[in-house]
Image (cartoon, rainbow, N blue to C red; front, side, top):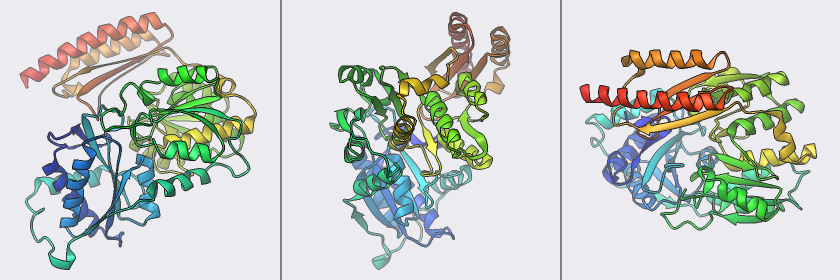
Amino acid sequence: MLFGTDGIRGKANEYPMSAPMALKVGMAIGKYFRSTEHTHQTKILIGKDTRRSGYMLEQALGSGICSVGVDVLQLGPVPTPGIAYLTRGMRACAGIVISASHNPYEDNGIKIFSHDGQKLPDQVEQHLEKLLRGDDLFHNLPTGMQIGRAKRIDDAIGQYAVYLKEQFPKKLNLEKKRIVIDCANGAAYKVAPKVFSELGAELFLTGVDPNGENINDGCGALYPQILQEKVKLYKADIGFAFDGDADRVIICDDKGQLLDGDEILAVLAKYLHGQGRLQSNKVVSTIMSNVGLEVALESFGVKLIRTGVGDRKVWQGMREHQSNLGGEQSGHIIYSDAATTGDGVLCALKILEAVIESGKPLSKLREVMTKMPQVNTSFKVTKRVPLADMPELQKHIVDVEEKLGNTGRVVFRYSGTEKKARLMLQGKDLRLIQALSSELKDKAETMIQQKGKQS
């Protein structure tokens, strides 16, 4: 399958992220959305992050879309949630983001939003894969005036910035707030400083000088140490580190301590619950979330709903359970009153709203949650061997869970964006889970390699 947990992803200029494949993907997307009954507009947006390969893939995708009779609007570097918003706002039939999110610059990816700004459901992705495997893509192509046209839009960042500022209460401002922002040399490098400065904040910026190769390079949400150092250095009130496409955020409080997605959810849930704005008294997160989040939510009468990994699955869970707040430990936070996908800048604004309205610093608000010791590890795989085909590994996982007791958890899964297996252990005793994690990782890695060679 081409589609993982977040679109198509791979090394740029190699299959499936080659220009010829991007051309075919563009054709498949154009054909599908042109024929979809509930859409009338024949235009598709294309945005990207700051990777060097974005130029190549942008042109290939655009050519494929135009070749099937659909117009293209090229937006340039815009955060992934910005494309979701602009797809709705500009009445396009679809929006495409060229980004590999938190991956290094050598990689790239393709994410697709439907006309309503939502990521595609599994059945649509499967239909696109069927089109790509079939022989019909190059048949009956339009000619003459029916060929699509491409146009570059220059004010996309401005439109998205206005939308973001509208999500911040008009009675509030960020005057006298000292804020550090790390944009990971990625898609938020223009819009995030614009939004926070226009709301009155004093800013200290890093990761805002992209050169096509330095996206996520020792900066941003994956490397928040720079953020911590600068918050302490400038005695800032708060700091935000975004990833390459700015759909996730990691936060640093006024004392220089980091908050991951679980802790952000706990803070926002308590704030929204206190204001009567938390729908259905439920928060949606994934199987990777810390047990401490569940305990924190229960303390003020809110239930945690767990889903599979990926903000698309979180979004589906939110719709199913009528919740307006969900997210992942990695920092994807979805606030559905304002967005249809994870939005790092929007999340930052909601945290600032909670800080200002409560009159308390984030270091105080975060005390709502105490994290359970957790160990995350991963290793590379050449083949994703199903866990069902490895009964010995399944038995060993059960044995580890028994050793951890009632409060312990083990999650084994394959990454949907990289050729890796991921392992997560939670429990009360950090030394115990570290030892068990190391042991389980070694056994899993050996078994997967052996099974891979046999098949």
